Image (cartoon, rainbow over all chains, first blue to last red; front, side, top):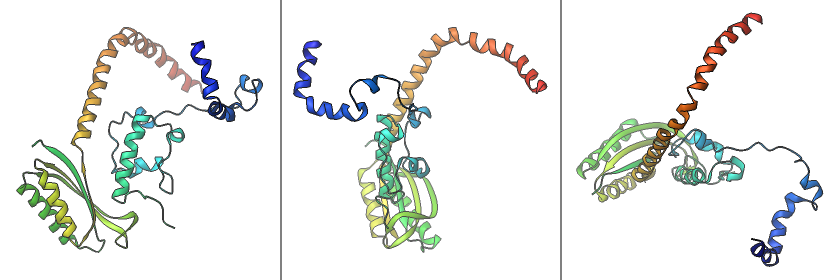
Length: 107
Length: 147
């Protein structure tokens, strides 16, 4: 493990720093302390309701996962699990095709 | 050929008279039966606002059909007919049988798991539900009475 980990930082050092940089902030200190704020854990809404098939015809169901301008909201915003996000994407795209949801809102 | 399930949605011009829509639907049904298919369900959603403009219209009359097809040429023929019909401004066919199959598989998995899980829980479960009903009801009537 230690042997594997050791070379990694040198190879992929810069991108790693970039990734861990923003949330960490400074070195050690503040990060190790208590979290500044508590984030509620998001749960996949479809998993809770045990949805096996996301119907593209139910626009009200899809609406919360789409921005006003028609963008599909990312998983990190809605908390949808990857499986349901995939199905959701398909459903939204079908709904768009038949003008139930917008591709992009016209002004 | 295997039996396939399709959803067919088409949008008519908002000014289309009801009789014409009924005529379109009946011709579609007829075409389906000619090609060894069957229209299971017809739903008229009525005039509703479209998310974007189609054929310079902001509203459209939505009609939804659910149909079974055993012949590949049927969908082609139905779509050709819809394309030719002037009143129809948009249509879409979606094949759903494979997704439904997948869905049923998932449901089967879940039931299988659920069937297995209770065995472990039944040992603990009877104890938990049994105890609260005995103790909880007496305490609940008391609380409202006190307040």
